Amino acid sequence: MPRPPSPSIPEKEFVYSALKQGLRIDGRLPLETRKPVLTFGQDLGWVECAMGKTRVLAQVDGKMVKPTPERPLEGIMSIHSEISPMASSDYEPGRPSDEEVTMTRMLDKVLRRSDAVDKESLCVQAGQRVWHIRLTIHCLADAGNLLDCACLAGIVALKHFRRPEVEVEGDEVIVHHPSERAPVPLSMHHTPYCFTFACFPDPEIPTIIDPTNLEQRLSLGLLSVALNAQRELCVVQKAGGVPLSPDEVMQMIDQAVAKAKELDRIVEQSLKEDWAGRHVEVR
Image 1: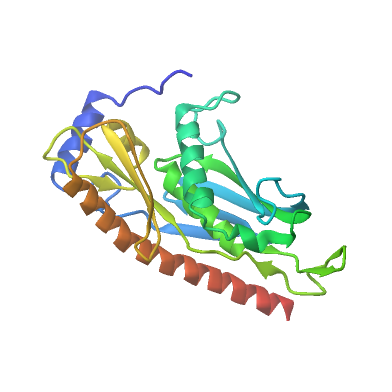
Image 2: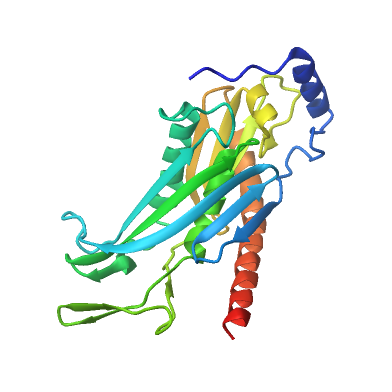
């Protein structure tokens, strides 16, 4: 895949001189994130997340399947993500780009391997029937920091989703229609969020959070931190670039903790408002 053109020298100098003064092109402070806007669809588990001009759509669906032989008491969760040319002209259809591979791996670590969803609660009949929860992530527009936006869309979609109520009578499994019995939310252990920091080669330039496309290209390395509002660290990933001291990494983690608490409040409030709106419609 051809690499996108490098930013011009005037662009580079302008961004660097602004960052040295603690300013960013979009008017944010170095450690200020773009406020996420969550839009919920008619179906439960359909969420669109926008951070500035970066937009991601996440969708969750569930079906009953036979469990894997090595884990007969656990449900299955799978994540599928794609970055199409619709997100940016930098991406090509067909072969996944390096960014797409990195994002898919990180989403798998943050949302699936950190045990955000309680897989044992997805078991219907031991060794016979379990729920397979499938999370699909579509990247609609890439204006920088696609990973954080995708992680947020994914975790909110999982919290928003409801599966049908199931009853087991002997060997028979009865799946109740939502009109008969209220669907059940997924049992979740915790809610991880991802925060990406961009580091620059010039020591006078501060580290920034939630980089835009241009800032991302001009940076010399990205550090992504995934954690929840309870200060539990899930993943720390650094992709090449400038070396960081342990103190610098700890500072970024402390910043991410504060941001996670703030983000958790926004997510819970958005879910509550959407749920209240749905109950009004039902009545």
